[in-house]
Length: 280
Image (cartoon, rainbow, N blue to C red; front, side):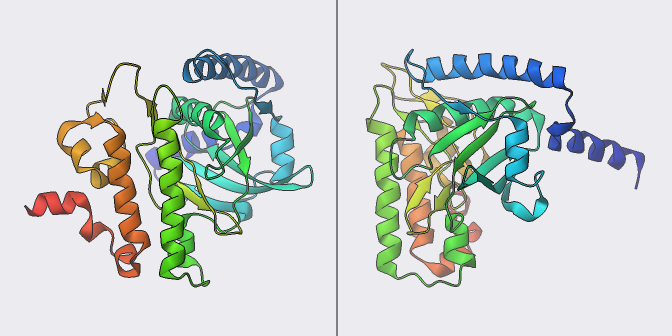
């Protein structure tokens, strides 16, 4: 292994194993992260912070058998999702493996806390502030993501069941847009940001790149700072670099077309909105 590769591996490993932080470093991380979380909650929730339960790193480490790789249920850069057991219940633990995801995690936490009351949103249980990047704790959705449910699972789904699930995701998206004085735009609705529980109820999550439209405005121009998924799924965003409710509508339309068609699921890239634009 070359020196450059070893250095890269070492840097990734340092961010993957925050349990090696000293007690003093954890105390400092708790204070710094706690301050930033409070600030983010106040700005997101119109000055009314939502109480969030905090867990120690030791509690989450015990819940996952020291973050056993065998308990990883989902990997989506820059996060790993673990299945854990805490206080007699099964939970999902979302842990960043990249320090630069720090601000995205604060956004994810604040938006999740704000919208967790909706039954079609993956409920935020709490967080751990004792690591470089805050670790998030959610309710457990037993059937994985939509991608797992539609493609990997051996359990068949009828077209009617798929459409019912699509309607429920649409309701959750509409809630983001209309339930608050400032609309929340998810920006990244896809097969990997919707989980499915044991009753086939979809749970929207993945708010790392979400944003809030300021009062009096109808869009936010972010100059194409969203992820590539948003570019692929939203022609309007691809063309203008502006985030509006239409961004989520386009993403949802892309998702629904894949969810109702097995072949489209398996060959989604070749039929993406971006590909259609390029073919014109």
